[in-house]
Length: 501
Image (tube, rainbow, N blue to C red; front, top):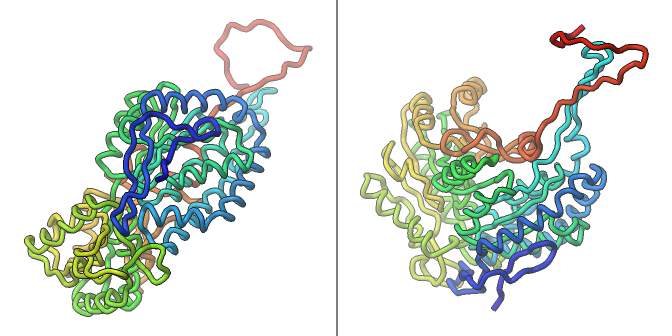
């Protein structure tokens, strides 16, 4: 049975004797084990990064870009292999995993432009024979702590830009699906990245806490749940680190009466049940403005009935299992909770048929099919809490204003969408809604790599989003240089306060 190890200073490392089980979510069987880093393991990774940083910092921008380009080509060539690893340990279907890799590669491609992205500014003659210019330099050793739901894409939000900017990077992936991290590490080495610039420590809270406390780790990026994001931000900043911590979400889709309901139904099913709902940009609440609710629910039912639920390696499957038994049980508990709060259970995912098995609730593995709750009371737990699974709630409302109030009154502000054919309403929505990423007739408005990803309110701790220009700024520090090359024919002492002339 495989053992997923650490990657430190360009080689696989066994590390401490502690391990955790890795499961195949489609069967519930143990498929391997993963090492869990001790404090000493983390310290070894940081030491390797510290040693590698000076030479990589001083490498030319062209040299860094060349390594990035080679890494991009290798990742592209191995994208099927990477997707298969993700599918086997996370459970998402192969096409979804393949798409995850493709979106992550967009950030790699963005980072290939680092010679342009790190250009500074120059002002000649700010005073007599004095010039000023700005430069951006790498922070040092930086770390990324990433979640189970996107074991390739989310790390690629971080490390391509961090490394392109001249930093040394330590990745702490989720212990639930760790194998993708080692394939990416191997490809970095093959691309010519110097040993120690990219390291992987597998692990749990022990590894996280050591990274947050280690004095040589200058910055930390995190994506995960809001409680842990808050902990990472508060602990990291208390230790003097720069931190960007992206938390949870409860994304609403506001459907106005003039919307194309076939388009809306397609979007709601795709955005609600893709990746089994285990993504922070999933649509989990549909706000249906009267009188469209009944027709929209009927159209969603029709589409869900045609979905095929099965193992990720079966090409017929459109949705796979959830990542762990504990998480599946937690998500399933919201079905009965919703009914107890007054919602109507239109589609019960526990009754969904699974390819090669029976009902989801009776099939080995961590299965829960697409679930639809209608007439969900505004403010109920099913409406407001992050479920992070294939549970779509429909809340009936009377107006645009009521929908906007429900969205803005929520704890989270990650993503949202409005579906309408009214340009004025859409423009008003993008101005008034208190959310970081907005879709207009687009259900999952994940920005392209050259823009930055991140939400508002309890969906983000810190003031910097990931990738795009904000990512470059997060992994660099600015300097302003003022220079004067004196003319030998001038000089003399002047004790007065310096002024511009």
